[in-house]
Amino acid sequence: MVAAARIAKNLTQKQLGELVRLDAETIASIEQGRRALMPNVAELMDLHLGLPGLLTVAALELPDIDTTPPWAEEYLALELNAITLSWYEGQRVPGLLQTENYARALFKCRVPAHPEETVEDLTARRVARQEILHRKTPPTLSFVIWEPAVRHRIGGREVHEELLRHLLACTELPDVSIQVMPLDQSAHAALDGPFILLETPTHQHLGYSESQRGSRLISDPDEVSIMARRYAMLRTQALNTVQTQGLLDRLLGEL
Image 1 (cartoon, rainbow, N blue to C red):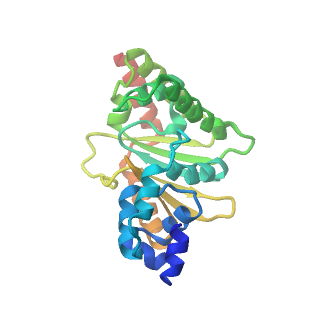
Image 2 (image 1 turned 135 degrees about the vertical axis):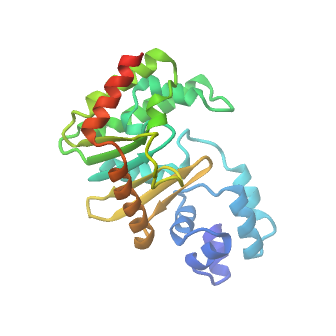
Image 3 (image 1 turned 60 degrees about the horizontal axis):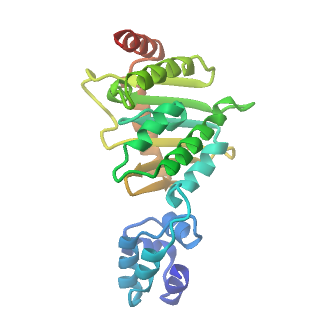
């Protein structure tokens, strides 16, 4: 419906994106069914495409058929086959490094609460993603995690202890680098929030960022370059891998 209305107005995906404040790739993802049409975006499209609320009604009535948000599926498909991932996270431990109990505790923190079966489904999906760490040719993985994320006792003491031991075990994996950004660091290159840099098997470099109600998969070279420069700066500001192991050991000792 979006594509038909856009073409009828003789607009390109880029032109429509400019009208509704989205990039052309996001418009393409919506038209191809890879990303959900959010009601607020549908309202803007109705306005600019001269439609009497048709897209808004359609967006509001789309059935919820999957526990994985449609806007995350495109990234997850790329993550599965990535050859490098560089991940900054500030509020929680990155999904690829979570234990099952920690992931379950995170999903139980949601407000409004998920039904129990949804929590278990989401937990299983997250743990399954970690298979890429152990595939025959694993990706090269770099993580920078802000210190509050490794200090926060999500799920309680036992879950936290298990997580810390798991993180220490992950530091021993040959293709994994984990660094903690300490609280006493006076500069921080990623105060705008978490993000991921990804390289595909065809050596395409992409960025990804996520918010509470949506996400962006970024391929524009200028934007990806900015994210890459931020990540490079983060790595110089964070503890090195040996210092990070020391911090994790100390946190374990404090329990």
